[in-house]
Each structure stands twice: as C-alpha cells, then as structure tokens.
Image (cartoon, rainbow, N blue to C red):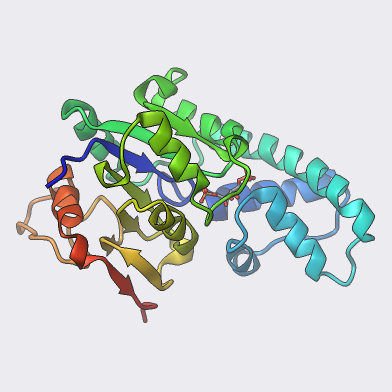
Length: 263
Ligand code: XBP
C-alpha cells in the first residue's frame, strides 16, 4: 500500500460551512451596498452552487434574470459586487461567526504528528481562505500547510482538476500518495480527474447529492457513524475519523464507488 503523504483540503463546505451563512450573506450585503435589488435566499443559493467561483456564480445568475443589466455592463457589476462580498465575508468569518467543522482540527493535528503534509486545494479566493484560517489557526496559519493553491493560482476552477494538479506539483508527490477531502460533486470530480482518491464529508448544501467516484462518503470527520464503506464504531467512544481509516479506504481503490442521491 502506498503510504499517504498528504491530505489536501477543500475549503468551502469542507473545512467550514461557509456558503449558507458566509458567502451568501456577504453577497446579499454587497448587493445592498452596490444598489443591486437582488437578494439570494438559501434555496436559490444552493442552486447556484453548481457554479464554482463567486464572481462566476453572480454572472451566471445575472444571465438568467430578465431584470439583469445589458450584457456589456455585467462583468463590471460582478467585479464590484464580488469585491465587496469578499470584504463582508472577511468580516463575517473574522467575527468568529463560522466554526471549523468538527473533526477537522483533530485530523490536521494527527497529520502533523504523523508527518503527513497538509495542503489546501480550493478555487475560492486566497483572501477568503486567509480570513477563515487566520481566525481559527492564527496569523501564521499558512506555516502549517505545505501547499496552498487558491482560485487566483489557476486558470480553470473546479471541476477542472487544475487546482489539484498544481497542489501535487507543489508537493512533489503522485496522486495516489494524496487524499482529497471534499464536500461536493464538483470538488470530487476535480480531484478524481487528477487521479486523487477522495473522501467526502457531506456539507449542508450537498447532504443528499449524488457523489461519483469517492473512496468513502460520510456526514463528517467528527463521527464514525453513517459512513459508506462503514467504520467500526466503539460504543460510547467519541472517536473521529482518523488517518488509519482514511488510509484503509484509499488502500481499497476498488472500493471507489458512485453514491446515488440520498433520500
Ligand atoms: C468554492 C467556491 C467559491 C466560494 C466563493 O470553491 O465555489 O465560489 O463560494 O469564493 P471550492 P470566491 O469548492 O474550490 O472551494 O467568491 O472567492 O470565488
């Protein structure tokens, strides 16, 4: 079995539930600042999440709206709103409004103890990653990560594999020496297209989404219940998913499966 050398983390939805209470709320505040009449409710934002990248998401939404400005004006509006959105987002996460998901810190700590490197592979903006991780890991958070690849570092956002290929390149490792932790089908597709095994910790918006090609799918790293393939759960023991579990899943590459939509 190839020993795991790196755990590559997606950010939004995987490290924290940032979309519903972070980016969405920040977009609505930015709309208000810019005198744009739209507001995104939770359900509509959930639909828009299939478009990766905040600016791209807004452009996509504009293209569907009968009351959108003429096409030639949309790009400038999207840039202005997106810039303000990121400022509001930094304020929201900086005020400790959004916790890291349970089990994330535990797995990061175990990686450090066992010499498994940490990487970030996200197509969100670097400023947003910085705001979130500064809040939870301190101003020197980046020291803990051997590679941090963000939206600005790639030409094509997820589901394109570029962000994962760049992370592997930065770490100098092959795809089977890494595992990606993702929450959403687009992120899974990106990691799989780079040949990296993927463990899915479902987030609120993708709690029931069909997942194609993951080594394991479950509700979060905080629990050993509810995973497919299953994990042994010791009754009464509050143990998180750990590196041995993840290595075990990755070793069974033939257990890579499609997980249909959940009821
Ligand atoms: C996350 C995203 C982003 C964030 C907003 O991508 O889709 O669009 O919602 O980020 P990933 P920006 O799955 O790669 O983490 O506004 O900074 O684009």
